[in-house]
Image (cartoon, rainbow, N blue to C red; front, side, top):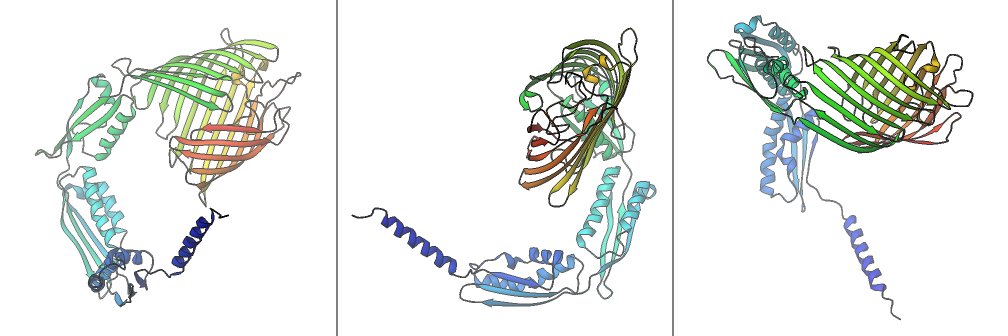
Amino acid sequence: MRNPKRPLVLRINRWYLLLLLVLAVPGVFAEAIVSGVDGNVKDNVMVMMALDNETCATPEWKIRGLYDQADLEIDEALRALGYYHGVVKKSLVFDKSCWHAKIQIDKGPQVHIHDISITFDGIAQSDAAFQKLHKKLLKATGDPLDHSQYEKMKARIESFAQERGYLKGTFTEKKLIIDKKLNQAHIKLAFAAGKRMVFGKVVIEQDILDADFVEKYISINSGDFYTSEQLAKTHNDLSKSGYFDMVDIHPEAETDDHTVPVTIKLHPRKKHHYALGVGYDTDIGPLLSGAYENRRLNRRGHFLTSELDLSPILSTADIEYNIPLKNPISDFFSFGAGLKREDTDSFNTLSAKLSTRLKHALDSGWKQTLFLDLDYEDFTIGSVTTQTLLLVPGGSWYKSVSNKPMRPTKGYRAKIDVSGSYKNPISDVSFLQGAFSGTWMYPLPWRSKFIGRTELGATLVDDFDRLPTSYRFYAGGINSIRGYAYKELGPKDDQGNVIGGKFLTVLSFEYEKAVYGDWGVSVFLDTGDAFNPDDIKLKSGAGLGVRWYSPFGPVRVDFAVPLNDSDSSFQIHFAAGARI
């Protein structure tokens, strides 16, 4: 009986044999082999030499023409980097299938910059900023000659003049003189800066806010010297204000009276903004969130923000009325209210809060918030339920620095909190509390980085039993000690209920490495605990993590095990968002 599969087997064998024959034939390629130079010199030669772009299919007459032309191209490539004594030896061979060129280059000695002469005419001579630029440019004296650096020097002078308001400045002399015998270069530049321009009339086109309020964001003043820095600052401040969707600043430099009128056109953002989201957090479970913002309650720039987060373990609702102060770029006053419900394995609580905030952005990058909260909390631990009313003044200071906002490899985040209360008719407990949290990130070789994290806290209190759970310290969870459940760790009462502690210490050490594209892995060790001074027992957790550097920020999945006694033997933690 005939085997129907036999022809298929033979056909496959024939194709396999043909593939072996093709692979056995040596590859035939055109080549221009350059020797004697390396690094950026060789790179520049290969870029300039047109012969290197041709293939075996190129006609012989064209190859010979490009071969002859290569001497000029190589000389131009060498001169661009300061080599004016190059010697080229080359050969060209044609066989039956292709061509092959060999090029030996002796680049010779390199020309160095012997002296630089730069003069500024007019008022620029006495401009301290131009004097500083002059000193900086002269530092190139003695450097190897690179024509691109010479071009950058001229461009730097022109752009600097534009930035400083010398909008009609021009070069009256531009010379690069080469002494080939001495291998020296002499640079002579003369720049006629002309008269420095000043800002003229500033016109702001918008109709949604009071003019005097918008003017607080404007760094441009009529009569001040023109600078592009002030234009950029004005654009940046208006864009970050939250009121405008597009900011168009148009300076008119072509005038006869040395003034630059400026027109600023502001296009408003939508007054109302709504947001709705769903997600999942391993600490608090599935999450439904919503937000509403009224960006312009009135023409004085007041605005309203509100947020709602619902989950099985932690739900919050907050609303805040914000009032810009004298400097709306950095200063705000707000008042608001909030509700919070939290139901963990350790406790459950329901709290309501009225608050006032004074917010200020410091020049150093720190964001300061001074507050006064009236907080009522009804909380239950085990079978004991307590109600506490507190009037709590305090402050917080926050700073975050990173080299890349979406995928940082270097930077830090730090937050300091101080709060307290004194027992009186509207405050049931006296306490003083301080806390610090920080994350530090540092790049390492092989596309990896180290991430260190710490949390520290301490509380002095006269009646701990009446201190609400919101002001007690707990540990455990993805942003605390991994390997343990959310707020699982802390001092316990006689019935084994976790009641929280007066002190907190958490240390985390993590090594993260990118492995493929937008994916990475990590290994970590966390240690610490929430505790009281008479019972300090640090707990540790360790594990491995997977990282996805998504378009909307890092996503983390951690697989952690506790290294001490725990209610569970294994935890999976999930979180999204940058850590600094």
